[in-house]
Image (cartoon, rainbow, N blue to C red; front, side, top):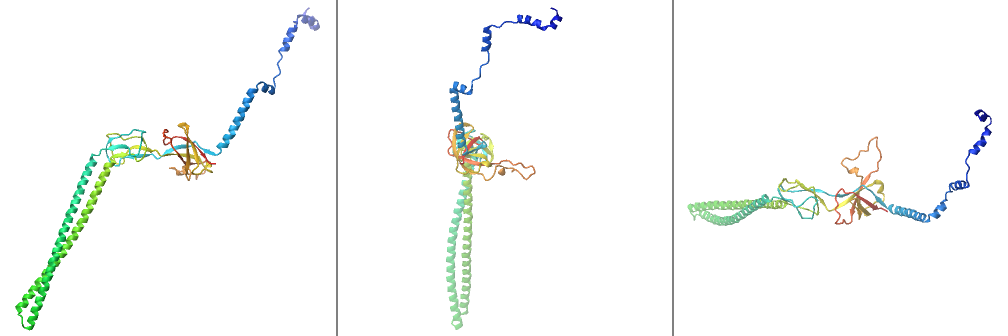
Length: 384
């Protein structure tokens, strides 16, 4: 059959195609039915099939929910901040006297107790100064003894001058009586003029002797006043010499630089053999008394009061928990007391929540936890 005939009668070609199509067996039909996709199980069927997993998941979910609620109920009573650090009063240790360093018995970060030796200055010059001060004290005491002896001698001279004055006054009285008698006899014509003149001369001589005796007494009294003034000066000199001796002894004690309180030595700069001037720093010192400064937001301070308990965790020792209490709340933000306070009187002001330092004191620092200024902590303050 040619192509034109096929085009005219396409039905004539169908029997031929039917003959050529492959036949399907019953097994192939059954396999085709089995290969159809199965219906997906429902949620109830899945839970029934995996009941153990579903039960455990439900319990875990309920436990997490209950734990979250309990955690919220507990945490809502606390205020916490990450902006908290250990603080202490570190200061410089210096020698009050100058000289060569002969001994440094401590090392960096060493813990010392109150009274422990930190540094030693050469003390030979200061021992010589003590000897010189002792000599000056001895000289001052000798001067006092000398003036006191002069005063005693002067007092004897005063007594002698007063005795001579008494004698001169007695002789003057006798001369006055003799002159009066001679004068009376002359007036009565019973006495001679020569006798009158003689008694007058004796009277004048005794008057002169009496005046000299009075002058001697006055001079002796003035002399003792002068000696008493010298005695006061000698005593003042003794006090000055004694003060110099005390200062020399203090300077000798200052050659031993000791710890005023227990703490740790840091930044040791002094070394044996170096010369130091008075006031020159030898090391830094951090006392054992430390506390915590927590910079809370101002919005967290509504219920915060001194005395409230605090739980503290130190970043360096995450497994340890300490207890303390709020000691004080600074009356102002940290920036208000900074070296350069913020100036907000500008046109581009942006409100920022300020932080206020809160001082927290630890009830008892464990001896096995070495802490120092600047270490980070996380405090939880119970405010409700």
